[in-house]
Amino acid sequence: MQEKNERHSGFGTHVSVHSWICPTWGQIQLWTETTDNARPMSPNSNYHRLSTALDAFVDSLPHQLEFSPNTLQVHFSTRSSSSYAVLHITLFLARLTLERKCLPDLPFLSPLPLGPADMPNPTSPEEERFYAESAERYLISARDLVTLISSLEEWNARIESPFIIAALERAARAGLYVHNFPWMDRRGCLTGISRISEAEPLGTGEETRKAMEFISSLKARWGCANESMAKLMDMQACLHERTEGFIRQDPHDGRILADKMSRIALTEERNKLFSMLMPPTPKAGPATIVSSHGRGPSSDVDTLLLAATGGQLQEPVIASGGSERWMAVNTPMPTAPTQVQHPVQPKAEEGGLDALAGFAAQQGKIGNGQDNYGPRDVEMGDAGIKKEENQGKPADDWRRMDNGVPTSKWTMNPIES
Image (cartoon, one colour):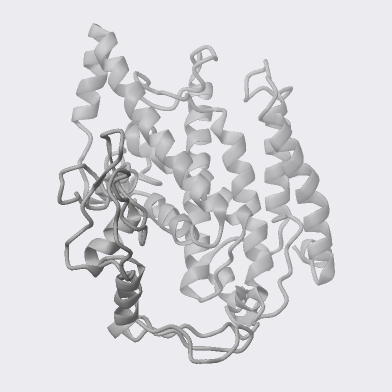
């Protein structure tokens, strides 16, 4: 243990962490895009090689870098929680990526985790135990990832970056998977319900919702947060559609799946989660204003004139061809070509631009006599809303760092970029 602590003490910790995690994380990402014909539990498989390397690195971490609530509080007190959090978020994400390929995409009839659908069913108790432990590692990593990020927020040390959003999306996908197919979460890591008799659940069941709430809170500042929420909504819609389709198309197996789905406990947390993924209700469009002549929707100018003139619009003008058309504002009325008209003094039309300007003047006053380059207040009607010029405060001033205090310098971890 002493040798282990010396090897990871001081600045050497960060150097060794970065030198290991960057290439290994890249290898895991590349592995997901390849096909490994060997069974995952085989010593010759790439999964076994990467999983062994990941376990060896986690086991080599000194006590002060191990993941636990007590260790996390120590890093909060020393203001080193950002590096600690990024390290473990990356480790959790690597484990999630590895174990996801050991699960079937749609476990309609699988009574428990038995490996991916394109692999032969386990032929021995050892293989069954391997897949059960793989699913448990997958769900525990998702649970711990959300717990870590939630703890950072509670301690006012929130970290925001596209990397964090991507990690939370991966954890939320794991939660959606088991909330739709809860028999795959036998220990209750993310559903909060243990399917093993006389065993307490390993999670609260709130982790998936918390991950999605965190992503939603970042939508105004990060465009990728909107994309992550859209992907999660698409995933839930796809799972629901595929499940319903299987039940309709397969009379025998569909009846078995329908019976399994009907026995899922309808918890309040599950209802909250699925309500967040419902498509937004379309908002009602603006009210249609119809002219006094029943000609259908009016133009924007007609709408303003309708308000300025108390609901009276100009009469339509009949052109020489007999078709009805609307004259432009302040356009003199045409005279008959065969009649001689005595010159008359021009008169401003009611409901023209004069009425429109008067209506605008009554609604609010703009400007205080200063030029466009100086600061000015804008009053909008009776609301008394004042617009103040931005004092040139740089956007980076509001980026939060490890201790939650705004700073003018934002340092990005190489793993996050």
